[in-house]
Image (cartoon, rainbow over all chains, first blue to last red; front, side):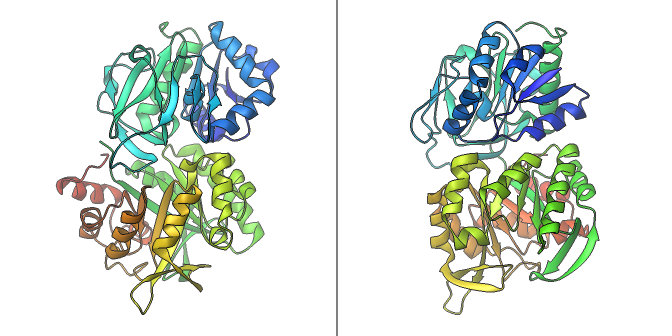
Length: 207
Length: 252
């Protein structure tokens, strides 16, 4: 069973619907004390960085999520949830994140390109990982974001180009983050969620 | 490379898809969940629902339509029409909408855009602007389904929307909407030149060449059409094949 962390500002049902469609057991969770009981955790989607981090912290979800992820529980952040895995962001002032992966979240610097980076863009494979292999090369996935991660190359599995290189899928141990929305990216996105679920059930290879 | 998006729009009232000409004379034509699933299969890059309900009961029905659609459609879903508060937006986002579009309520109270952007992030706040050419050649913002001319300059309003935190503009020409004689390229190009956020061109798409024209002549990022797709005059796939043949990047 996968726990989808609810911090009150996200688009949880898109993620839940995708897992249901894949016949992967999952439920939305608000209570930090319950997080340890899941085989893996998903941190979705939509919202503003500071607001999301404040909501996560005031409910005690931030601290418990971090503790479990460091202890090896699989964790996957999506879009804003991916950015929250890093040390902090410059969105609407400076905000601290979960600091599970080294790096910071910065505004996209793409001269001549509109912000947000919104729409379907193609992927390049930098380091195959447990969620994404060579089959992702050239595949289109759906992005909606104005900020991007700035992190060491070793954590970047997939990237895309939008005026500059944008990390699209990051990983460290059993922690993953997708800048795009796998739940809104058709079959290729659904396949990455399925691979995350398999890893949670110890059926997938260890990253 | 970022691709140009093709977005079918479903005008929904009382749980049914309807489509009008010039926003009046609506007629009943189908189930929104079925229509959305069909479009997704055909390669739609995004689905747009426009809530044209006038009643509170109708609006609650819309949340259910969004929830049902999100269960079976795995491309982005934008919902607009009658959103008056951050709470209205939250209800739709929690039901499975990826973006909400704000129109009349934001014209009446622009701070709504800023408030919604701060809570949900700019990337899921779309400013829907309905514009009509005025006798002096400028474009005015109209609201309430085109019934009220605000006298506001559409280009200036688009800039204001961006400044307040909108992440995208859905630009509908009231002059071309439903007429199928082509998108309003002059208006679209002008808005694209004034803002640095994505712009969806809407109103007037009637044949393949209209889609390549709007992407070749303007900086539009996406094109939206409703009845054209709904009545199967063209499919999303046909439009994308045409764009691809014209050298315009699309997801196929």
